[in-house]
Length: 158
Image 1: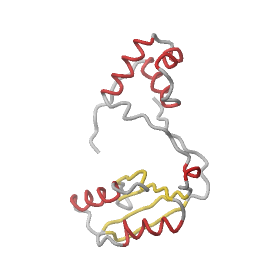
Image 2: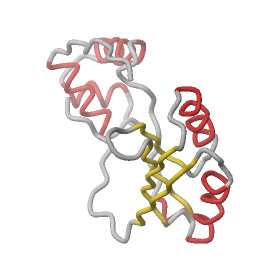
Image 3: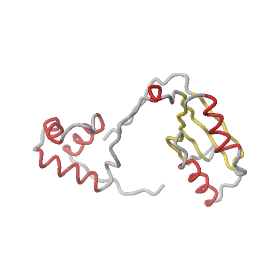
């Protein structure tokens, strides 16, 4: 990961970011009222935060169990060959898979940790066969299945 400089924020930027992380669907007028700013100022600030990449995107968070994706798995992957091109190949493979929600290169320990969301155990087995069993460079796979989610948060403290 490349370390980019951390941008400086004033208190209004922080209020805007916190309010949008709670509800990005609110109108600019509602957001401005919530953060105690004028609507034009608020709109300019949000636009700047988006242009600088601080706000990466705005999304709806879907409840997995309501759409038939009730099995969460955390998967550790160790590759046989950790050459840069092999790591990039594996990242491209998992990036193309919709069930893989997040992929991290980690150290020490396994090479990758994946967060996976699938319908059920047969769906996980099919995914594991596609992504892991069929790949010559995958040495070890260790999967953990969530039995209860006690916290899920997308907000970052700013």
